[in-house]
Image (cartoon, rainbow, N blue to C red; front, side, top):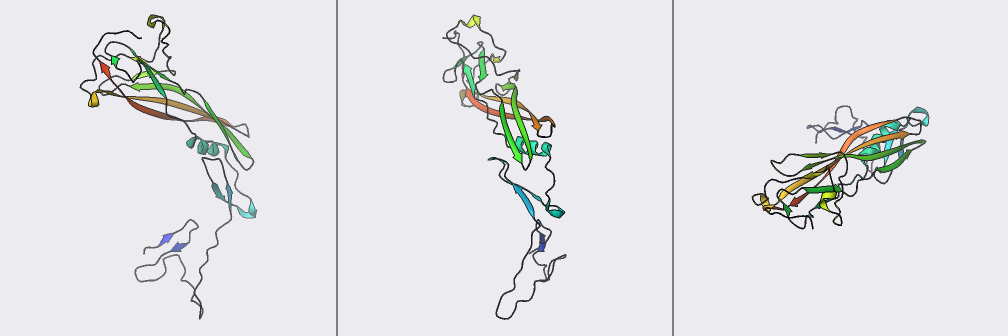
Length: 228
């Protein structure tokens, strides 16, 4: 077995000739009537449970028994990586349970477009992290141009006349989905999220953008009709 080093820099394993691994020590001879014992004393470590998503973070304790100072910025990044940011919940008009129509705008809007907040504490340091949806893109299918929306899109109201409503988040198909795989367009909706953080020491800043996507099938037929 080739030699390996564990997390505390102790080497274990044996070389091909059975000698102890380089940098290691040969195990003590076993006393008569007993077995050899090997012990590895780990350096003291300070462990802190951050949240239900970040289970445990441990850091070595420095000389004198003091743990290193927690960085609010690093704590914020750790929390950001585990934020429960959801995939977009998308509705359409005409609804997906019925066929869309060539030449008729297909409306898209996201129903779970809302900010998320969370707070995490490690020892005496705390960080508040806020995530906000910022923009949405709609990829209608292969060969179709991508639509970009600055918000969640407007919900279509069947109780109002179509001419009295407007959205910046729609797409008009110029061809039916008859020749698409499964006779349907594969639509992909992606929401970009931005994040900010604020620490207990007054520090703060922006966090790297994240995205969440969802895909669904959309049938489009050759017909002329109005919203019902």
